[in-house]
Image 1 (tube, rainbow, N blue to C red):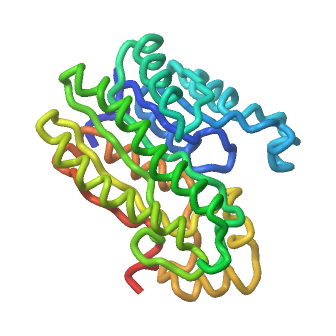
Image 2: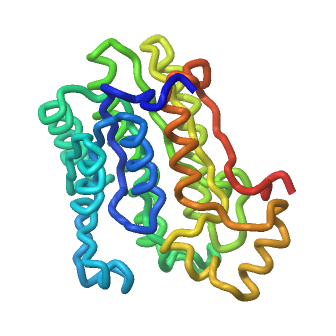
Length: 273
């Protein structure tokens, strides 16, 4: 490693970072531990929509994540921002630059929650298809456009990491909308990497497998679904959000300066099978 705080002096934006048991929060915390000041975004979900464990601990979504970052001695800026809203994306980029002085890192983690989209194509409602496409693809595009413009203007390089999924590599039944968006994120990463390379901005993609988050509790809890997934996962366990955070932080650091345009699986070997 290049030091204990390889991201000292950097400013990162992590979208979709408000859930206590979520990938986005752990990405934000890892970036902060490695020295970065962090902007964390959330969609402004109402407290009554929080899972029971968050309610019990008095969780406050992105405000709580920002407090955790500040407790490390870093600056934090919580911003309510809807990924697929162009005006919100512009306000996010402008606010981060104004409040924290610069932007060096963008992590596109915000994604549509699992809902009525997880059905066969012939049963999939157009509204659900559009909901997933808008958040996962259009939201990534709009946020990237706004933030990357600021990074380019600085002229000092930077890093962009898109969070995809192994379902963007290998679709499964009832995942059509989600898989299309996550496969799209992989190709978006490649195109963007080519465009950003002259500006010394690295662009990469992380493709998690099954990770122990709130959204995946129906799969990670003991039972036949988990058993099936474990049978096709060589390492025989689910991933942890902290592990995703460490990989993303590495891709944003100096030791990954020669890596761009790559989509990296972190899935216990499942896609290999």
